[in-house]
Image 1 (spheres, rainbow, N blue to C red):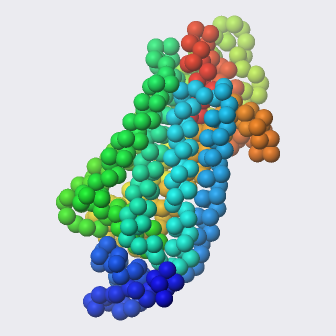
Image 2 (tube, one colour; image 1 turned 180 degrees about the vertical axis):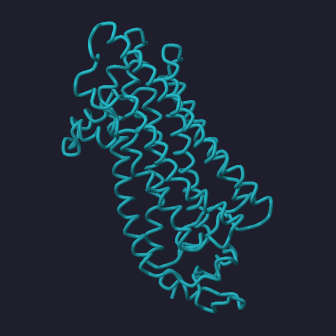
Image 3 (spheres, rainbow, N blue to C red; image 1 turned 45 degrees about the vertical axis):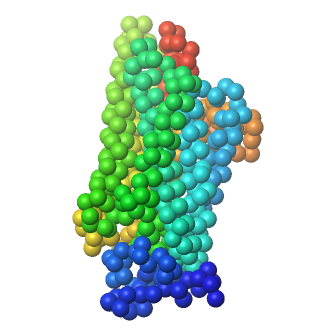
Length: 387
């Protein structure tokens, strides 16, 4: 019988294993050299966790693949949406789409069998693709944030993003990420099975400085710097909108009116609501990628906290990011919703009020931010303020 039908049959366990044959490590024999000795101390996980993870990944995979595909399809088939700024959003949707398309099926197969059964080569490929598409998504969000900062904070002094500039950023993102994710194949760190034996990722348990140095750089350029930049940018975006709101109030006072906004728009101040948008964006990003950061650093400096069950959460939270990105970065776009309603009415079921509640985005803010003196492209870009 092949290892596909009975993976545990081909497993050879070290004689020093304290649990004997009762261990979470049940990968095929040709993969044992990839498994760190740390994992042999743990007994098998409760099969219930495999079932729950399989169900959760089925839901997330379906929603993400479908949601990101619709985002790509609508943007590509709606001429008015093909702006330079939206190219960055499409790039994010593409990376999220392929991440879930390539990550979900193998994980479901392994969850069914209760261990990784696809062999050493596909373990490395799986880990590479997860790291690759995850990094592309992270840096796509960084460039989207940079564009929002450029348009809203710099205002009329901003240099408009061109199609060439957007394509250069996109090409740079994919090239840089590819160059960054290849070294583990050549000895700078490596791709190995995770403790749950259902997925594979970078090696955070090997204690050599060469291996750890990869994770140090990884942590800075794929987590700490993007997080710091997103927080920095949204801080100044909120300040810029607050200053704009103050100017509007002063103008209203000079005109002898209570406000330049409608009564509905006055219910919540724009700066307060944009603070919520910024907080939501930063929080979702933090929740998505922090578990992986904690697992990696825990594996390097506090191994006892890293258990097979604990290692699952990094994958779960990071992949959830691919589900809500279409909502945060595309479906909340007013023009996108209009195009979606026209092309796929059955999917455009949310009213402006409902979407406003979902995204915490003040719809009247767009009209108040627009200024006749702004170049057309900058003026239209304010409709993407949630980005």
